[in-house]
Image (cartoon, rainbow, N blue to C red; front, side):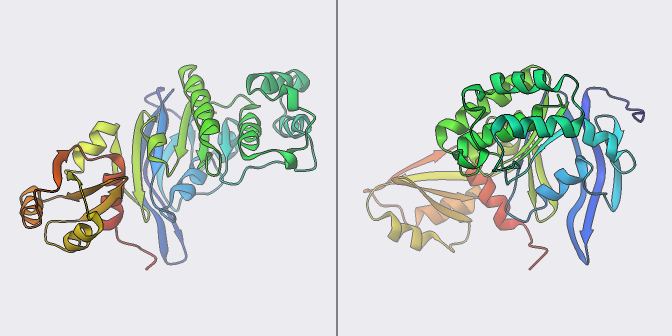
Length: 312
């Protein structure tokens, strides 16, 4: 039976979740709450602990420290129950290449003991537009169709929580957009989604975000909250010889990052006064300077630069 949960609206409610491998702490005392029907985005560099954290939530790993619930079940003692109600889509899509789409879905439905398996498989094929390809071998599918198959397999047992680990890596923009449209429809119907991604446009489509770096939760909240709390000032500059200007600015006191964005540079720093002093030293009439709102990628890079690599 589920453990007592003071707030039924919280699908994930954990505190102090920690995981170590040997002497390295890969997830460090993370507190997190995710509400029902929410799309929650996880950002962070490779090796930041995102996948390890997800695996603890879905019952594949046991935390070394910390407490909490996932779907009302204890993350330490009721992992079997959690697995029955969670759909987990790994970074590498899981399917049997020598089986057809229909056979793959039937196999997964059999594992979960889905009642009226044939009807469940047919519904899944129709919902994700796979019916016309149902006899095609999974190994012959393109990246976008493999993604649909993987999502269909995650949903076949009607989970209450969907955990997606970089699900759109390697698929084309059209397939990514269609995938996100489907995720928003699922969330609107009450399904909770926790998703890791490196794409900033995808992160902006989440209801709330969290940023992990080397096991530590650095910030979380809505997009506006994450951008505001970073306290980052950003200027955009356009004009000739931008690479030469970038070389002059890098390493200057007050300048934390200089990043090319198309035909402009984004110059950012947390000390607004020091940043403006650095910019004043290189201003020329041939360049157009504008103060702009820091974007999520600016904040992402800033947080990544200040984080300490615990594997270094």
